[in-house]
Figure 1 (cartoon, rainbow, N blue to C red):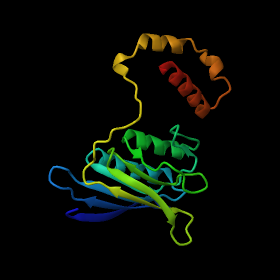
Figure 2 (cartoon, rainbow, N blue to C red):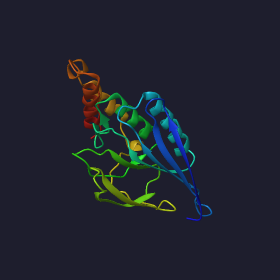
Figure 3 (cartoon, one colour):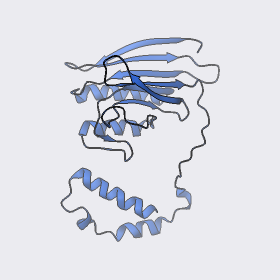
Figure 4 (cartoon, rainbow, N blue to C red):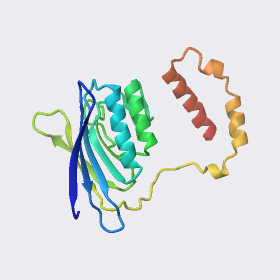
Length: 204
């Protein structure tokens, strides 16, 4: 890197969200990269969360962003992109709204992923490794590289080609579902998962 600058931010009242923001100056034509290190207390207020999300959104839409931190959302299912707690679901909404990618794939503590590394550019973060604990902490250290310019990554993920989709058939398949029976007696989260399951089956 040629140069960098830092600044810190705090939001909230009784419990503050603390974050350190670093701007890494990029080479000519590559743009800057913003790195944010954040700690979120488990009982943080919604107002403090929303303040952070606004900051993340503004940074994500204008430049490369790497967001690192302990966000205290242990009940999040990253495979299904679902969560049982309202604040955790709002956190997932922020990630989706800003097209952030979560690059840590294995749990760190008691089967949960609390310490996250997120980026808004595929290939911006690489060589992610989990190391041992630091001192007496029960958190694992995370080692990774921030690349100066995002590399073109050949993804192995299979995606749907909606340009060739038969939406008439898609609507017909969904209309055959007896939604009153499928959603009967379910809470909002369970109803969403049931709807998502039928939607994915229709896509196949």
